[in-house]
Every structure is written in C-alpha cells, then in structure tokens.
Image (cartoon, rainbow, N blue to C red):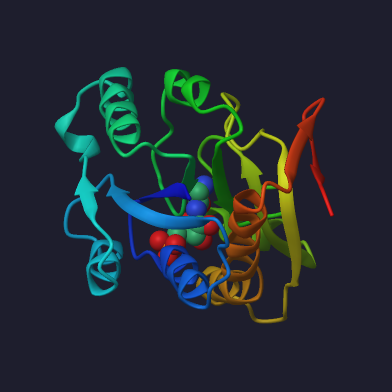
Length: 208
Ligand code: GAR
C-alpha cells in the first residue's frame, strides 16, 4: 500500500476531491495517511479530521528560512514513510533538498494550462486574474511532477476549461476547480498508485 501525504495551505477543496475519490475506491494500492498544513486553523485540516485522516501543522511562519522549513517538511515526510506527496493548494515553494529526496514522487495541481500563467508569483486567484487580463478563451488546470523548477516539472494530466463573457477571477477559479482540478488531481493520484506513470526524458508516459 502506498502512503499518500497531502500538503495543504488553505480551504482544501482539492484535498476533498482526493478524499472523495479514495472513498469511492479509486486509489487501488494507495491511501491518504497524513495531511500536512503550512498554516494553522485552515479548513483543509477540518476536512482531514472529519474523515479520520491524521494531520500535522508545520507552520511556515515558525521558520525564518525556507531551508530550515524544508528540512522540517522533509523530516515529517520521512517519518510518515511517504510514497507519494501531493501538493493540493500548498502555497510554499520548498527548497530543492525535498524534491531531490522524492524524485518524481511529488505532484502539484496548478490552476492553468502550463506553460501559461505559471511560475513564481502565479498562485491561487492571481493566476485567473492574469488569464482574464490576457483575454485567453481557454484556460484549465495541470497536474505535474514537482522538480526544482517552479511549475516546470513533467506534465502528468491537463484539462481545458472555457472562459466565458463576464467571468471574474472568482467565477473562473470555481469553474476551473469544478471542471478540471477536482477531476485530474484524483486521476493522476490513481495512475501513480497503479504504477502507470513513467518519466522518460522529462516526459510523462501513461502506461496502459
Ligand atoms: C487551487 O486552485 C490550486 O490549484 C491552487 O490554489 C487553489 C487551492 O484551493 N494552487 C496554486 O495556485 C499553486 N500554484 P484548495 O485549497 O481549495 O484546494
């Protein structure tokens, strides 16, 4: 059984999508064993509690330096014997020492079609603000492996979502979550649990 550790920082709707998929029996060979939050008191922690999933808070604000913070996260991942680490709205960029310890074992959901609207500074509502400013007609979400390049790791799954007249960043964020993020994140986790993801020359191959 693969131990799945989910990293969160906020409301945790993507965590909820993972919990729902798990409860529908979609993660053959894996289970969510721990939720780690970078902020105390966030609703994602309530979601974990309601479903009997152990959680930890490792607050970013308790660490001055990102390397010290990353070491604390790495220590927790090792203690939890994580086989897969999922960033589900986790808003801290960790030092590469974490990524190096878990190569192609960490995945992130990003609320745009990478390589558009991604990289440092593009997170949460900001992504949708920029997409609307540019006037793109299609946006979406991407699940990718985490590497030392912010939002630059091999792409696992993507799903496009239409932008509509009158969209605000909030309306677009909700549509991207409902139509894309909450679908492709659990799908990517299921594929990982089934050992169906292979990375060759930085390209993900989904095995049948
Ligand atoms: C989601 O839209 C996620 O894609 C985004 O933050 C939101 C978190 O929502 N993540 C990023 O922007 C990371 N670069 P949630 O806490 O309800 O899952």
